[in-house]
Image (cartoon, rainbow over all chains, first blue to last red; front, side, top):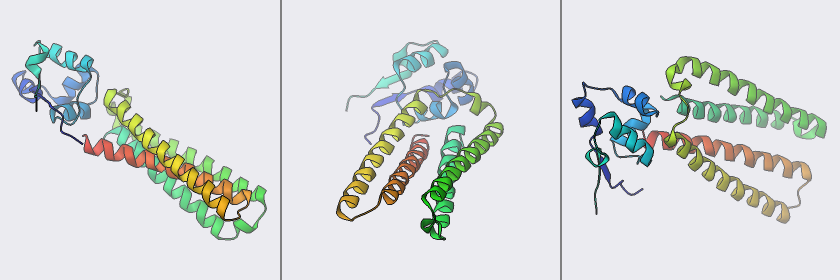
Length: 71
Length: 139
């Protein structure tokens, strides 16, 4: 399976937001903790809706949370 | 282990155990008995599977707590779809294989039916295995 060309700063942002747990973030965006973990590790690309929800939790624009890497 | 993965393990293990039990029963003389008796054994195997699986899932649900009450999210739905696709391909391949073998070797309808049933069970086991692999790989 080719690597996902999308990186993210979720782990860093969680730490910056009072050490927010994966479970707490998962509950906020309506997915399981395992899905948050998979997104963080770059093993799963979330839908646009979930991506926007994550960005909304951290009150940041989408591009500050997710970055698309060309090549 | 997440609840959905536990559920896949329960399906896989229960199916394997019921299949082994059924094959053992068939080995010890059931093949020679009347077709009604075989049909009854199939029915018992199906009921046993449903009851044991439901019981174990209820137990897993109680142990998993909050995880089990959470509805499936988009990643879990995607895993389900991928696993169903793999299981469908497996079922088609096995069904084709059984049909081709029966066309070449003179088999009776009972043998044909049992092999189609086996194809269904293997396809369902494939679905559970694919789910487990995808849950572990993408976790």
